[in-house]
Amino acid sequence: MADPLDALGYAHSRLVRHSAESPEAVPATDDPGARLVVLAGDRIVVTAGTALLTPEQAARADQRSVTLYLGRLDGRPVFAVAVPAEMAETYEADPAFRAIDLRSLAAEGVVASHELGLLATGKSILAWHARHRFCANCGAATTLAAGGFRRECPACETHHFPRTDPVVIMLIRRGDTCLLGRSPRFKEDMYSCLAGFLEPGETIEDAVRRETFEEVGIRVGTVAYHASQPWPFPSSLMIGCIADALDETIVIDPVELADARWFSREAVAAMIAGNHQAGLSVPPPMAIAHTLMRAFVEERV
Image (tube, rainbow, N blue to C red; front, side):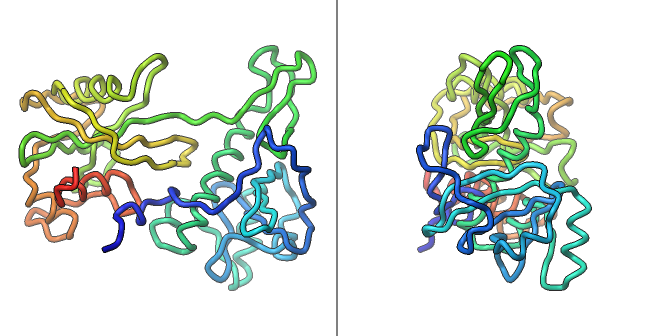
């Protein structure tokens, strides 16, 4: 039986990571064995079922703003490069190439699942570089260092490192029902798990309890970790939890949710299968919300 976690997008990677602490010298991007991920605006260039381009294929993108050394895959050095958005059209003029956003790339299964984790790393760190060109301590322009896993300030010598924003996402259960909500930005028929950012000085358990109460007015008792998922939009870590409700009266925060309701196990199973009688749906298997709902339906929590 397949592991339900196998379908999680961005959660699998065979990359042996470079890091700010790695003593390895950064290889050359034109090394014949190198592979490059090309990010044109918010789209990734793919060819023949892979986003790992050869140096010759990547050479079409000759206007590189940032180049990262991600590490090694099967011994090959792997880089991620940011190029102007219009370079996507340059590639797509050749039918052998396609430029596609990372969310669609994962949903459509365009590349192998282990590439998605590597692509999430590259996209997240490139997005961080785009937003952190100046020192938060003194305001001076910073420079790229450690292959892209650090920025340094030449004025005050402060080192800056890529950040990850932790998010709790939780399936709230009560007996044989679970609570799902619909954000105003969701399509009309889709319901998902509640979620929210972890705050400084807060435990995962307390974040689950706080966010649940803020969004639907439900008190939560026991909280258990289930699984996690990198979410590179721009750079979050989704911490999936299962939590037990202490009451059942829903009071919606209309700013956060358009609707929230309790669903039976059978109803959630129908939503996952795509045959719910009212046409209600859930996020695709690549999303951790889907994983949490499936675990509830299959009573694996």
